[in-house]
Length: 586
Image (cartoon, rainbow, N blue to C red; front, side):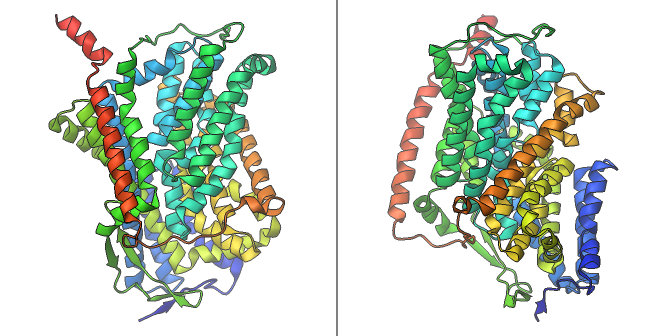
């Protein structure tokens, strides 16, 4: 039995679009007005979409529920798998005390508040966003700045503003991977386009942070640091997003930015140390650690960077994909006619080549280096799963909704309605992404909601859909700083609970300004610099190992040797915390 996807089922495009927008309108109201929990709002949205798919679009019930199941499975793997393993690795470093050394190694570099903002809010915050996401960047960096003596409002506000460009590649590229999953566009192609948009923002944000704090004169005084911080981050972000993998830009660009700024500060210092006139007393005790202790603390993320780099290489992926499992969705495969052609619905369970598996391997290696017992390892993993259970439920429900909306014809109907904006749509595309993140608090959720619509609308008006799909993620980064969830995290971490409105007003203008910058960039890339937009590439199914699989094996062996050497060096170093505890017990 086959079924033809229904577009404009009510015969009136405006009315059909309004009806099909009801699940999105409900989700927005549930999160922004009724303050409903994310997983509950997501499940109700999925249920509402199923009702419309069956009752309005005429989708057979079995196909609708199988479509929802396919979306749920995609939400769990590979997307949820990356989320769980990324947060798990981060939690391991916290559990062992190594993360305290990481924080100290950043905070002890300079006493100038402007440079601390660059290092902690911008670079270190980007590192946390790339490695874990989920509120960790703002919570940790804002608390660090407040502990160093920053005015709490500035500490939280600056960290919220700094946490922009890294969001598109947050949580090891989850927003990009999600965009690829719901559109069928190759995730690497989307990554390339996003890198050619947010890299401009990465150059600008460091200057803007210092300008907010110290004015024009204060910014000029540390211009070398601003340029080194922003340009190094942008170049690494552009290179890794275009030539490596969408999972690496967040981590790699932040590490390059940190290292470049540290090297600069070894040979250059501002003429005077700048502080706030009314700053509070410092409460954060910053300790200095040996080079060996710092290497050991950072080693989990060094291993992570190496493994993720390998997993993004085609020869390595070819080797790892030899054990992939393909699940054909009977009753759905070749049963939906979309665009005059039957859709192939095959779920690829590429368990070994998945990014989350690379992160888990990095966590296992890190546990050996940090001497974590199997019991502790399992305890932290169990706690991570428990902490993320509702976040995962939100992810799978939103992905389930996204696939039901896409395959039933709801999203194509909305996309067709958006064609009324005509050539103005590339300017609007980032604003849609911004709106999605403001409401949901997540670039991933915004991409799941809107990327298919962005794709269809672009195709209707004759614009490369890679541009608008990427713009959804790029525009969304500016919405993060004013989303209620992120505002709440920033307020809680700096003692501003009850003053969320002050924090919202502090960041609102900056959020709108950054969104307009991305909108202008997107419009220019659509009509003035179209050569900046990569050619549309569809996602390819899991393939068997190719002839160059031997190259992949060699790369994996070299990586194993490198990690072994790193582990031997790091494991010989006793951390400062271990040494301190030893002296205390003596």
